[in-house]
Length: 103
Image (cartoon, helix red, strand yellow):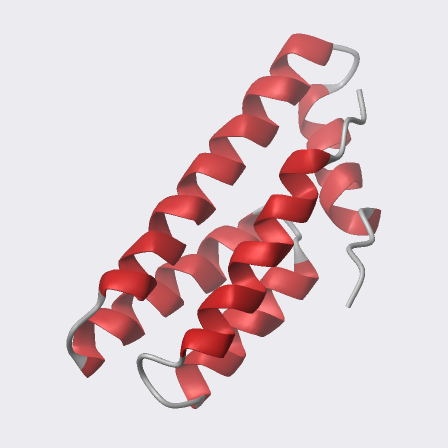
C-alpha cells in the first residue's frame, strides 16, 4: 500500500500555517511518537502491552489525521498480539512518511 499524504499533510499545514519550521517540527514529533509506539509493539511480551501500544498508536494517528496508520493500528488491536507482519507494515508506513520531503 503506497503512502498518500492527503489529510495528514493537510492537518500539519493547517496547524503550522506559513511557519515551515513548525511544520517540520510537528512532522518530526509525529514520526518520533509513532515510532516509539511501534517499538513498544515490537518489544511487547504480553497482550496488555500490545493492546496499550496499539491503542496509543491509533490515537496518535487519529490526532494527526494519518488514516492509513490509524487503520493499521486498529487492525493490530483486532488481530493477534505480537503479529510481526502488523509491526512491519506500520514501520514501513512511518519509514515512507519520514522519507518524503514536503515543506
